Amino acid sequence: MGLAPGAHKVSESGAVHHVGDGCFDALPESVEGKAGPLAVSRIAAAFDIADHFADGDGFRGAGEQVTAFGAAPRLDEAALFEAGENEFEKLLGNLLAFCDVGDFDGLLGALIGEVENRLECVFAFNGHVHWKPADEITFRIVARVMTDEMTRRTFLSMAAAQLAPERIVDIHQHTYYHERSDADLVAHQRGMGVTTTILLPAGSQYGLAAECGGNASVMEVARKLPREFVYFANELPDVPETRRVIERFLKAGAIGIGEQKFPVRVDSKAIDGIASIAREFRVPVLMHFEHGAYNTGFENLERLLKRHPSVNFIGHAQTWWANISKDHDQAVLYPKTRVTPGGMTDRLLADYSNIYGDLSAGSGLNSMLRDEEHARGFLKRHQERLLFGSDCNDSEAGTERCTGTMILRTIRKLADADATRKLLSGNAERLFGNSLKGWRV
Image (cartoon, rainbow, N blue to C red; front, side, top):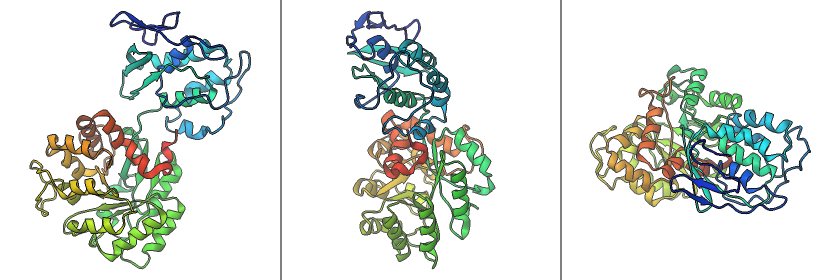
């Protein structure tokens, strides 16, 4: 059966015909008791599996009916379905509930049919099948011809990975942002294709200078939509109730502290107190750097990083991003000139493992657009330390008026595919781990 009709076909002998050069790449011989090469090649091309699949419970034999999804060992079934917004469940629910699992042709035929219309080409070499996606759901997969026993656990895991949309973690959003409703916030994030959003609350005063909601508001949204939203805890760093408030919401499920956007010095005792809470709870701190206003004395950020080497900090806002350029005039918040290499932000990201960069807002976007040649090198150089965020109060995504949309487009334009994946999701997964509820597959 051909994976891409009219272009490349799998022959009855188990070979994949490469139309481009007229060659056949032989697949392994069929092994009794395992999926044959024809059936395996039809589904293996849909997935990139890096380990072996001999563990887990095997497929039931021909004639045995499956009446429900029974979780195989070590398979978190709920987590399996979450990241794909139930696309996997909708597709396979009918296929597996009443199918004869021993009949590969019948069981896999419908799945392959759904996958086929997403492909624009298939080609083969050295026993591997590759393709390019036909739409914006990025598969970027190299399929392996498998000779291990095909298990139900393997099949479920592979299918979920195939059908889930591109993963995007937005580390910077707010509730009530300039009076935007929760419904508009949710619609905006879904419109951008965001998988998981981190909501950053204001403290008890100032509303982050943007009328943003506080701790209770972000927790409420996250509890209503736990597959899509998680949240930080926050409070002014220099008030008596700082520790009590932040600890209360961290214990309730917050996964970080911030946005710390308050009129204190970056190397003050107040910020040391915030860092001590973060160290105790093992969570990161997101800081807004704005010359003359918030977390001032940017040149002293290095002292903070040295004093708290086990605490991860996330740099954000105008002064953080303006200082990618050497000899920057601190009074200029949105510089438009070309970047002079060697700025403080560049150096800190290179020298300290406990500092990350939040690419959100107009400041993050400006840091890339002001000098695209520099930005390409910067994104490549620091691809392990940069995180996508939107920090926009837009209600409609997908237009040039939406800052978050423009940041996504710019990252995809200036960074290669591997770096893009890290910036949009991989680095956040590494930094926050299992705390990202919407990331479980």
